[in-house]
Image (cartoon, rainbow, N blue to C red; front, side, top):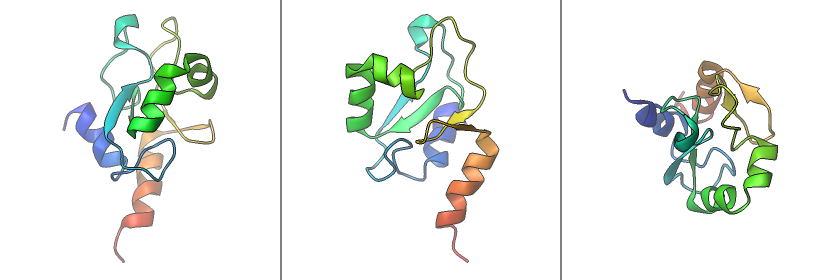
Length: 102
């Protein structure tokens, strides 16, 4: 599975920032032009509104962690809407717990 496929699988179809619009785009937290890699930790599935906001308001995106500096190492954990980070495996399990059939 490619990192993009992992991210799409992880988000169960919803924007990983707002949590309610369909995820339609994959965003690099550390920009590719600054050496950001195509890793699941560096990618986040966003709806078109949240993705547009991140690029239109980069200062805000850096403050909340939707973007990280080109001088930073690639993210090793996934960002959550409250600004905290969580290990990817834990995040995925938490997401799936809400949608898995009993």
